[in-house]
Each structure stands twice: as C-alpha cells, then as structure tokens.
Length: 93
Image 1 (cartoon, rainbow, N blue to C red):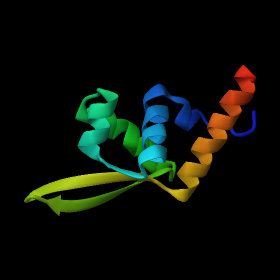
Image 2: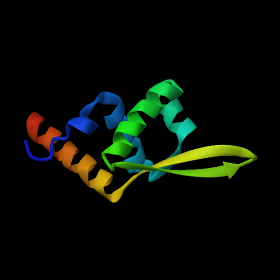
Image 3: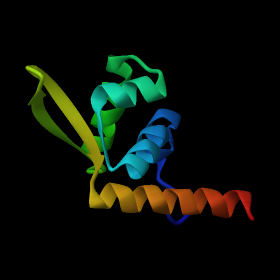
C-alpha cells in the first residue's frame, strides 16, 4: 500500500513521530515522559528512526547538563504524513 511505512508503524515509533510532528522539536526526556517508556526503549526506537533518516538529534548543554533534542527531518515528516494518509485509507471515512 502506497505510503504505508513499516518503520514508522511500530506503536512507539508512531507515537514519537506524532509528538515530533506536533512539537517540531522536543527534548529526549520530555519525549520519554510523554510516551511513558524507559530511556533505553526510547533510545532504541529513536535509533531506528535516525537510521531511516526520519529523525535527527541536536545535542546542547543547558543548566550545565547535556541535553538531546529530537526533531523530524523533512523526509521523516513526509513519511509520517504519508503513513497517516495510508492508515486513514485503510479505515475509511
């Protein structure tokens, strides 16, 4: 099916993409808290999305602590939105 993306379709990866599509950019800890997953689980899913070219990370120091910010790439945003359209086509109006 056109637009359906098995990489994005995994529940946690779909939720990551949805959150980043809405937020634009989010700190790793915020994404973890919103999804209710452990850091290792989030890291695993983010790595899969990064390997696909869908997510990028930006590292920064804030309040003397190192932070990681996540965002969708242009390709990731397009793939996520195409995947949503494919899901909507499956379930109908």
